[in-house]
Length: 583
Image (cartoon, rainbow, N blue to C red; front, side):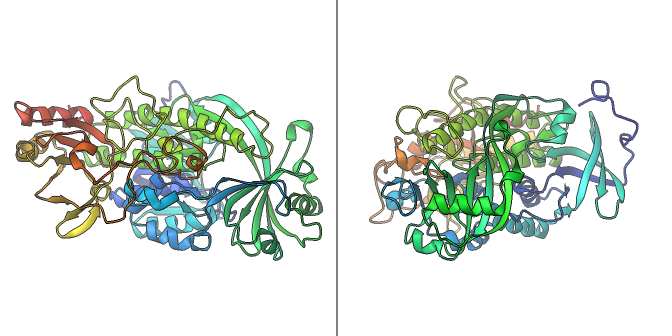
């Protein structure tokens, strides 16, 4: 944003006139903002986060954290904390569709997320059912432990930007104290009604609103008797007198019910009285005398929209400020967290001086196409599951390749070399094989006597993996890194790394759900496309024994050479310079 095209009112801060100075200012302290803080903290980037609300979310929503998101949290050192916070729902796996809980029409849209445990073949992590109100405090604590300056009850009221950074005015809501902050970059994670996006004049495109619900939290101790041993993630209740979605909070007495809300027909939130909500719940579950204590109500709007661009200049959009998605499958929150991770390492690289400013421009080129494709998949999933309030007809047959969205999305353009530019950012089916612009595969390896995943190698610096006979690449890596200024870790198969054999009894061949079907639609996705037989480092990475593959800090393949090349130092140096924009 420039002041010429977006003039600042007199009340806005003058550029460079500031009380505080930080490399990155984050606006918004929900899942995406807190994840941005966590990822930046892991990379040693000082930052300030401001959130207008006084505390983290208290409403149990946004619960499905897919396997890719959990891989990122694993790399950030918080996976086990999150699983501990989510332990009460650890045994909930399926999605049930029923007329009522007591009726005769019962169908599992899928019964288990990971049939046969085959997901372990392709990831060191798994999906996790952790509600936003449980997840945010974990992220907040971890981010603060890493030095994040996080201020709740503080609102950014205005900002200006120029070629060198952003100057913002922040206000402590309780005291009214106003301070001015100067930052190199501003990350707006301020939600679907993003004031920052509106200030930048960036429109949203797409189908728009899909449906509206009221999320009702309630306490009903007897409901567990009607649920029985059915440990579902969500149960879609189709009683025409009261359709809705039932979600457990603790499988005992606390629950959430999503009721359709039709504001276009004149229905208001005031129409959802406690008495009406209790009646809707009793009718939907099929227990007329159920004692219901309504504890909260929150409206929400399902939409399919994506910003026309993911920022302007030094101001970047992430999460719901950049895209809105239907909630089925929790694609919106997961896509937002993955936005944060993509952006964090790029900001860190530029601020640390080993990448050029143009690297940040690749954020839009990479993440926006993924959001467009994912948002369309999320809407299709809502139609297939007949989400309450959504009247769209489902596509013929179950949606295919949901794991392709979760682990198979790729970047045809951006900070990559050799990607197929005409490839869809979300392929139809998942393959674990590495491609430029795609996620690097998982293998268990031994490093310094310790068992780690190859994914554990990727976080702070680019990594060069070389084949068993790839000594030439290994030998020139240090020189290429010195000449480009790019910090480069290098691991050679058979020397620094040894691939572990597959344990006896491990699943082999494509697991259930590999080519679609109901099992592929879980939040986090069912596994698909795992390789048959023992793991093969060279085959999975698409290189011969004399080849090399360059993996970015986010675990995506940036470049590879299938075999030996003349003058490998020049080839590698040019690849580093092109990917990280050091030229």
